[in-house]
Length: 601
Image (tube, rainbow, N blue to C red; front, side, top):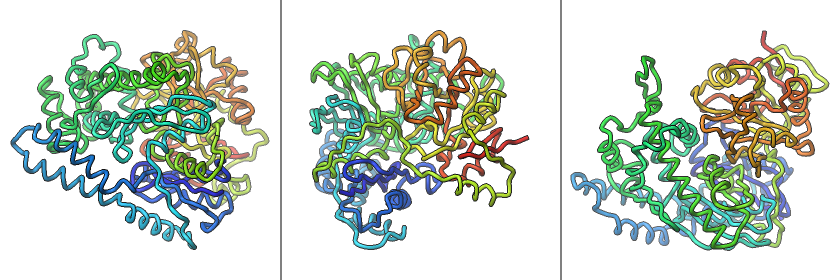
């Protein structure tokens, strides 16, 4: 059976094709449109790629699975909104109560109408036609969003029994779901409905700090670590705990600070939120995107002020407390020693590390595409299983995107009229450049899916050279100097650098670093002593494993610094032409693309 999974018209549109229950292709729309996130779009180009990968026309698709249950709109969602609104209405400051009340109602009604099933079907039909996909449109099945998340992680894990924790902003009326997976079945055991959203809470703090919500949460996670040394004196835990209240077995998010009320300063936090924060510190008002200030005599981003760093730490701490509490419940109340995690909040690798260390679980798996893009896969699994397919797809890799032959790469390089050379062994060529201290781009095989570059479209650096991290941040990625990088290492060497490694294939879990890593490879160790590693197996990616092994032979450390092949605010590059453009737009020294090498003098 051919099932086309898709998620669109919101965050991270994507598409995935299952044939007889097995994943054939996975595409994320931003990689094709070159628009970061591609929010609100139909995943037209991703769908076209998936079908082309299988040489399948649209008429060859048996069913389309959509990772959002529009059948809940408008009536079930209207009841949810009405009940929540009546519970919390009128609690904000009275000065602008009437205008805030009408604004909340209008926004809710617009959302209810936008996700009506007839409207979504029309959007999908128009998107397919605009993409040149003609013929009969297959039947469309709407899948519960959190069930799609749950399927995407459990059936991609190696576990035949596990607790499943899905955390995001919202999926229809649900923000968090606890489930149990056993054999080929998933059974939900508890849900938390909006407005009790951990994703909304963290997005509100992200926006307050002057970052882009639903995109820059990783920056808040990294920034929070800078406040670790002042944790005992942190002044923000108490006020933020009014927004996110974590109990022994439950949590609650107060929408007076996130949704219901005036939004003069921000979209995802209310005026009551600002009032609460500035009552603690009058100088801690919300930061405008890109806002600068003088810090120690130098112009710097305003969020680097100590009070905002501590604010980020408190938000991260409260998120971790809530997530660990939920994970413990799956472990102790439901007897699950294995945990699977998905949902946008699941991309918080520091949180995932604390879950592994504090929940009592023995093993963990985090879906690499934990954001909404992963629900294209999960929705396809739900529908395929309903029709009798075995949808178990244990992930050993994520290389399901576009790939290019050496002939196609050669034609692209010739067309650009640039100097290059052909090489017999790309791994040895790359290792030689890294040994000389060069920063290189690595373009090989099919593109990976998910938020991290994992050896398909990567920028690599030699960690034994002092200043490698600073140079990549400043001259190549053009991003904040304090942001950490991830290591890619051979699986055989992980115990040398990682304390108690568990799931290390996809850079989704933060682990404590060994003393050896801290002393010898500080560029991949964050200020809190953690790293988020990728381990490479020879049978999974022999070319990348050979490269890292050769680096180890030459330097003594079979580890490279690995970041995504792009510059800040751009999607990971996809095609050879994009690789060339990116290579010549920054401080990269070399590019190994297929069996060809480019260098700058």
